[in-house]
Length: 74
Image (cartoon, rainbow, N blue to C red; front, top):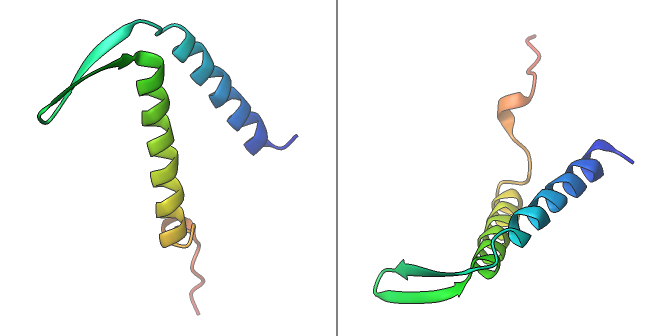
């Protein structure tokens, strides 16, 4: 297994542990709405939105960063 797959598995296991510990219903106030939902659902939605935002940013920017590239001087 390469390091990327191991890291993804570790993150997913930690996500599963955190969500299983937060099963009670919580109330959230977003602008004018009062929303009551299970913390598991809220955490899942937040993580999903984060992954989608990261994917979109990666696609828009080409998935590469110029900060870490070494430029050769002539």
